[in-house]
Length: 159
Ligand SMILES: NC(=O)N[C@@H](O)C(=O)O
Ligand code: NI
View 1 (tube, rainbow, N blue to C red):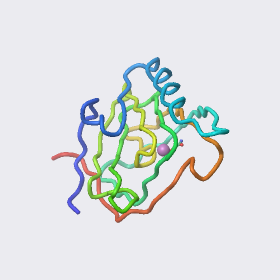
View 2: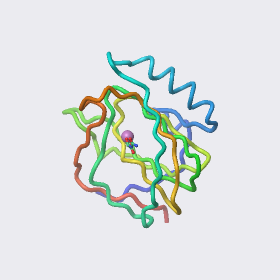
View 3: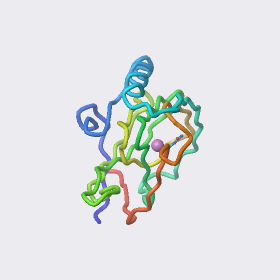
View 4: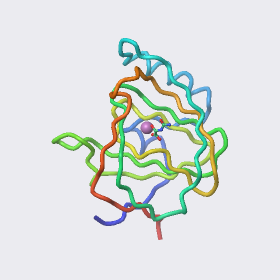
């Protein structure tokens, strides 16, 4: 597979997978609206503060994707430089369609909400260590998080 070239994160380009946030207040509203739309019995609100070291830079080889089938997932950078978002549609036979993956570079002023059941790469940070607030809904069952190994593909910077 040809390397996947990252593109700048814009609301329009990300729309099939969720929303781009530019103000933490948006995250709160979206989070509660989204969560109330798909609450499983026994689900509870989950807020975690995540610190993540940067990768060594691009290119990045992707081998693992994940989804939260029953919950949105919101990432609000609280102290971040650039970070990487990789998403892909569902394959007709189930699982992620990694061949259709799209990769974005977000600024430290941009957050995202993945819609429920969105295949995505785990939080990936560029440039320097970063901190995020992560909002989602969990019920403590396996449905909270599912990981899938994919045919490795490379995400690269333009040029
Ligand atoms: N913090 C956390 O849950 N992370 C993953 O779900 C992810 O998408 O990075
Ligand atoms: Ni996730």
